[in-house]
Image 1 (cartoon, rainbow, N blue to C red):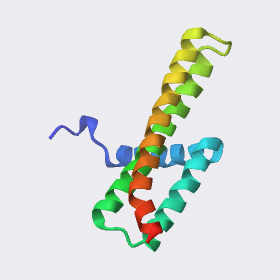
Image 2 (cartoon, one colour):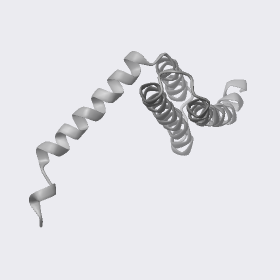
Image 3 (cartoon, helix red, strand yellow):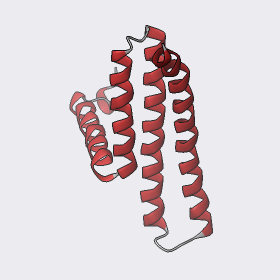
Length: 123
C-alpha cells in the first residue's frame, strides 16, 4: 500500500473542515436555518406519528436533499460574489440555477411530506 497519499490525521482534519462548513452554513445562512427548523419539525412529527422505516427513509432523504442543495447554493453564491462582485448577467444565471436546485428539492420535500403526513394527521 502506498502511504504517500494516505494519512489518518489528514482524514480526521477533512472531517473537521466539513463540520466547520456545516457550522458556518447554519450560522451564516438564513435559509439554512429555515431549512434546519423545518427539518427539526419534520423529524419531531415523524417520531410523533411513528413512521415506518420506509417513511423515515423518505423523510430523511428529502431533508438531506434540501440541505445539500442549499449548501451548494450558498457556496455558489459566495464564490460568484468573489468572482464578480458587480452585477453580471451570466453570474445571475448561475445563481438562479443554483437557487432553482433548492426550489426543486424543497418542492419534492413538500410533496413527500404531504404524502406521508397528511393521511396520518387526518386519522
